[in-house]
Length: 208
Ligand code: GAR
Image (cartoon, protein in one colour):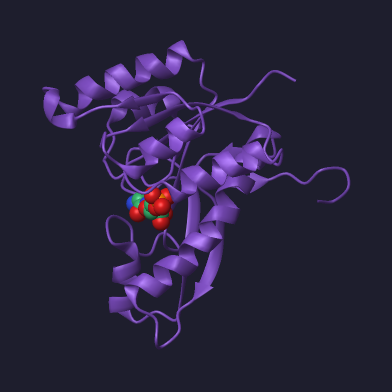
């Protein structure tokens, strides 16, 4: 089978990048991570990519006249590498039609809440402030809105009375590290069908 080429976008620690790289390394995820795109050259995720032998495009947004300008450069790099899927794993920037339009249906994002609850920044803090008893993780296709695209998969995480932003984030991260590589695998296997605003998951002949 032709290699399935992914690019990961991230801004910070990159534990989700690591979960993907580890799944690939362990032979559990049959994709090639062709590129890490990072808007903070000093972020830990850049070191993780270098250690994993993944090429990095790290840029400083301030050095560009506009968001559209750096996105055009990102798009060119994705095209050069014939990327099949873009995975946003903690990329903390809004994106514009320069990326969304050509990549619609080929770009996913992970978000630390059960969307449509708590989109945007500080989703874990928002959930705690709201007093919800269950929150979770969503993986969705990226559209032009803020965390509004078609949902592919969600997992619930219980909120305990003693939870702080730190403890709840840690629980959410554990769930993310399992879910994100799984969703990438489903897409790689052609199991995720995007139909308008929703998606369906196609089981294989074994009912799995
Ligand atoms: C993850 O929890 C991800 O869901 C969240 O950023 C974290 C990145 O962690 N993304 C968003 O909040 C996007 N709105 P990581 O750098 O350790 O992978």
